[in-house]
Image (cartoon, rainbow, N blue to C red; front, side, top):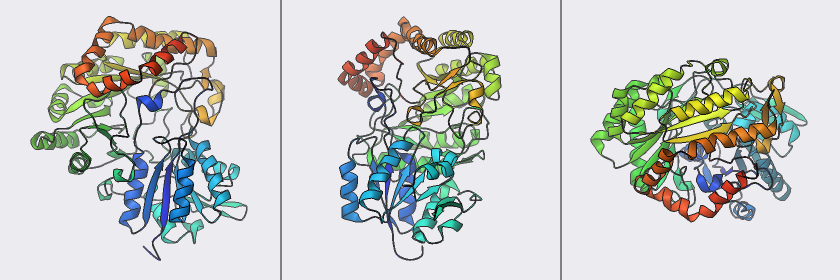
Length: 486
């Protein structure tokens, strides 16, 4: 570090990203810790600066607390990590800060500005800097120099008069094992304030983790603007030490991993499982996986290590539609993997997406039939959203009707309607998907078993039953079906 220590307030914006009049149950069903900001805070403080976090998602409507923090602590910088749906809310907060405290400089990062950085800055003069891509080294360079020479910092967009200047791309990547553990202690009330997706965990309190960056696959609907295509993995020992840290420091009993490809490196997962089995930490965990990276022997080892649920990105049951948008399309292999997960004694969650370009009523019906034929324990159906950094974004209007309303682009609202479908019919099919899944007796009985499998989820559901049933009644009025994030 050069010069004196700087202070930055990192803000996780909320975003008003629901159709007016709808009931948004996402904050009840899932309040996820902003792990990216926790990682940045730990990295910044390791290098001698000060960082704090204000989470608008966990504590909405608290603009006054942001004002109080700035008056009390006088940070040189305020940073925002934004998705597409939360970007406008971050811009709103940044405008308030710049109007009241013009000396404070604002820094935006995250997936949205990594994809549309220059456009975002042109349209929003309240943004002083934008971090494009991975944030640790770029943000540290900005703090170390207190903004001086920003135009030459790789990975950073800055202003020079009316001009937006780029420092060029940042080459190379950090070794993930060199990073400090995310500082969850910066989050007010952690871990009890934060809730994993309802019915998706064994015991409380829970926490989230990310043990990799990048993805080698090139699905048409995914945005890789921040971490790119090169896959990097934390080592098994690092992940184990992190899990133990969460248990010993915060009393965490269940960890949900949000990696895209948790099981891609089999040797890493085998080593991690062996470490967990020997240590007997008394924690359980969830993860996501691709079907081609699973087999029964590995799944049985994961079960012994505490794996409670695996989420599979199935997306569609129509082979031809899938082949247009992703590699390694094999519905039969997917079916086999679902069966193996269940045989190993692990809960299995199917992740589906409707509305991809080329989708028709017939392909959606095939997907519904396919989903109902699988022995899934849990299901989530999102609506395809053409995010700015995804391969489909540039030409998306060739394939249907796109309402590019950033606030509503959260995979829950219908912003893209494929050619040949009407919005009303698309909404009906989305509701039908859920209705046909949940009206089956085996599924209903499974939720009865949650009384002992996930008692905390049952308590949460009972406490907010009026909200959940209110949403159910709203569906009868042909409104969109809100579902918790994946």
